[in-house]
Each structure stands twice: as structure tokens, then as C-alpha cells.
Image (cartoon, rainbow over all chains, first blue to last red; front, side, top):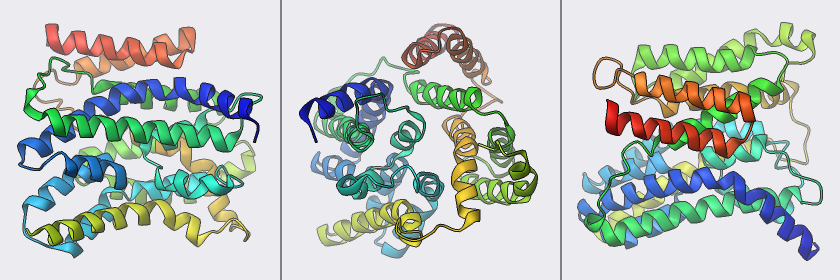
Length: 235
Length: 108
């Protein structure tokens, strides 16, 4: 691979990660501080952000570490919290094809944000798809790692007057949803995803709605497969 | 918990996360043909997943107390309008976030 292709891929990937810098530093610092005030040294958020790299699971893991030792429950909880990644994987089967040596890391680092960017971003002319997606994933991973570690080190020293900054993640997902909406001819899937998730949130509450929502989305998308495929422009 | 128990707990969380991320790629390796149904899902799912992620990122909004979800509603409208107007990802995200921060810090 030529050097300028790598540089071009980095330059193309970097701007996409900027909103995630804000979001991950905010969340990562919060996570690190949370571990710090829960009595863990900075080594914990540092190594956990590096090896787990899944925000919500890491927050829950803090509670697991403070509770009674129950490895099976830890595994079951994590599988439930992260079940949505199964959908990301199915969506990326094609996109990650042919990424060679990057593939294991791309899959390992497939958090909500890296998935959303790699799934929607157009790789510009002269850049390489594999390198582009690698940089998106790596830079996001670094933001999360550095934010969590700093939070763990400086912990209670940090004074927050950044109330509301967490909205940067919502804003990013809204933009990505909108981009998809503007690109697609048929809005069935977008509406199903939004509507069913909302209904399940109301019905099951914020802690338990993801799995019912995933199952319901899967069921409805299966039911509408025939008419959608007849349309020809489903996605 | 002892250090060993802590390490085992963390390893379990790693195992759970890695499983959910790798499973589809293990079940449908790139060399073999993917069933038509899964191909259909791969094409159709992203749109629904982005809808799910929008709701997921708003799951802790309490419409019964606090700002009643009004700051969120206003800020999302700002994001959408900015994006339809300029179609600049960073501008839409920054504009909506600044709007939200101003609303929750000074208004609500």
C-alpha cells in the first residue's frame, strides 16, 4: 500500500471521528471518574477501555466488580447489553469483506459509533476502504481509552460544567439516521426501526427494551420481505 | 472480590462483547455463500438499526419530569434543520449539541 493512500485514508477518516471525540471524552471521563470514586485505581478503566471497548457494558462491569463473584451472570449480562452488535455484524458482512488483515480488529472495535460511520461513510477517491475503516475504528478506540484513563487518574479533581455535552451522541445518531433517510427511496425499514424501538421503550422501560425491540424489528422486517423485495429498492 | 476474581469477571465481559461482535462473521464466513434471507437482513437492517440507536440514545429522557423532553425535541429539530440546510455532519452535530447545552444549563 502506498504511503499517500494511507495518509489520504487517515485524512478522510479523521473528520468523521471529531463528534465522537467530544462524546467519548465526555463519557470516558465520566466512566473513569466513576471507577475512581468507586475505589478502583486508574489501571482498571485504562485496561478495561482498551480490552472491552463497549461503553455500557463497562459501566455495568463496575457494579459487577463491586458485587459478589458471579462469572456466568457477568457473561449473560454482557451478552444481553451488547446483543445489538449482532445486527451490526449482519449489516457489515459485506462491507468488511476484503479488508484482509484489518478485519479482526474492525470487528473487535465495532462499537455503535464505529459501526455507524463505517456503515454509512463514503470512502473518497484515492483512499483505501480498509485503511479508512481501520483509522475510524482505531481513532475512536483511542478517544475512549484516553478519556477513560484520564478520568481514572484525575478522578475527583475534574470539575464538570459540561452539562448537556452527552447530547453529542444523540445528535450524531440523528444525523446518521437522517443521512440514511435522504439516501433511501423506501423508508419502511427506518420507520420500523424508529417506531418499534419507541413502542418497546414505552412498554418495557429503558433497562429492558433493546432485546424485545430487536426481536420485533426482526419479525416485522421478515414479514415485509416479500413486498419490499418486489419493490426492488428496499435499501 | 480477589484480584483473580476481578480478572475473571473482566474476562467474562470481554468474552461476551467479543461474542456479540464476531458471531455473525463466524456463522457466515466470507468464503461461503450467505443465505438470501441474511443478505436481505444485511441490506435492510442498517436503516432500522439507526432508528433503534436514536431511541437508544434518548432512552433516559424523562418526559414526566425535568425538562419533559422539550430540550431534546428542540435540539433534535435544530439538528435536522441544520442538516437539511447545509448537509454538513459536523455543523449539524455541533449546532444541536450547543443548543442542547444552552437549554439545559440556562433555560430548563
